[in-house]
Image (tube, rainbow, N blue to C red):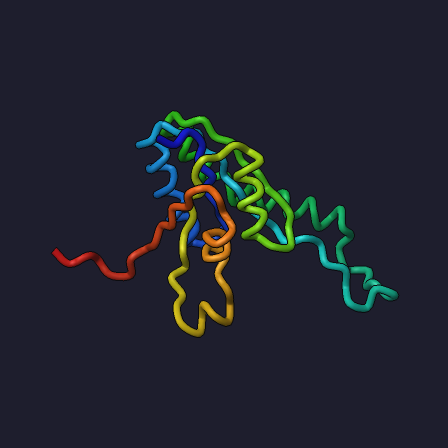
Length: 155
């Protein structure tokens, strides 16, 4: 049914658990996996005229984020390899994480986006926004949202 699945990660514990579920789902589908970490774009300091010497250059920042991204997608790639799945890892840079996820999925020929929900509701979701909700509203591809349960399901 699905041939190539994009699995997103932000490096958090919730994201890692979601990625494990995504890899298992990909194995059931016999699908290839693209693991994606989206890093924020480099931000110049507000006081551009005087950049402190300790402030990283854009090249240093991008290199550090590439290393962080590789570290975040590595567990997904390892899990895929153990299950015999084709996989690829990628770090992308964007102002809007959600729009970048949607763009990468389309550009890379994915036919499903698999991502987690941190489960915020009410004011928390309203104030913080939700990458998952934004992906759902902008994606033309199907999005499978994996939600971690805080309590086991009743029998």
